[in-house]
Amino acid sequence: MNIIIGFIITVGCVLGGFMAMGGHIEVLVQPFELVIIGGAGVGAFIMGNPMKVVKDSGKAIGEAFKNAVPKERAYLDVLGVLYSLMRDLRTKSRNEIEAHIDNPEESSIFQVAPSVLKNKELTSFICDYVRLIIIGNARSHEIEALMDEEINTILYDKMKPYNSILAIGDSFPAIGIIAAVLGVIKAMAKINESPEVLGGLIGAALVGTMLGIFLSYCLCNPLTSQIKIVRTKQHRLYIIVKQTLLAYMNGSVPQVALEYGRKTISSYERPSIDAVEQEMMNPGGGNEKAA
Image (cartoon, rainbow, N blue to C red):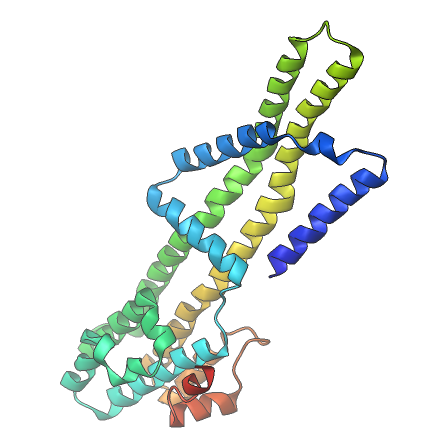
């Protein structure tokens, strides 16, 4: 919603200011300039990225518009799953724990946390490291190094749409110059026309430069900034898992280990201690209300 509101304000101020200066809005209506700039930008974007990144970029843009960041329920679901697994690690046999991590879709622990189960990568991340804990041969610092490497790899992949869209956004001013040069070439072909005609053709050419700059700084840059914010907050869930499981491996009881994970959440988004305690007593208790 912020993206839409901000875009409306930006376009309104640009067009409103132009009209207030006495400009005629119809002069800015140059669809073929937009076709040149937009088409060149989209074509270059497809040429420069694997199709997987192109598809993920569309998904990232959708997430940015929806502001699809984890809410309190998502954080509580992650902490609730981790608490249940750590509790069972202390009290149940290896076979019982393996039943949960080998088939999380049918696990009673994961079923009460739909936001975790829906995130296949996060579910796999949790199960893989709980399995390493069960094996019992790896030391905590070795697990931490492995987690850091995987977390960095996941973040790198998740930020590919951000980097790709940012790169094409930075190129829009230059693409706008291409459109402007083509417009000037068209104007030069009619050099014998009246000044009124030439003025209109040159003005149309300059619209290309304006569109390129506008698309770069007023659309792509804010959009990529929002993509980075959303994806970074989504990635925070992996940090919670890492800190919680490492605390448990280093000897903390499940209740204390959860606090290590909870403290990695931004203070203005962090669930309260009471909410976490309620989640420990009643896993997934808030999902019915959310539904």
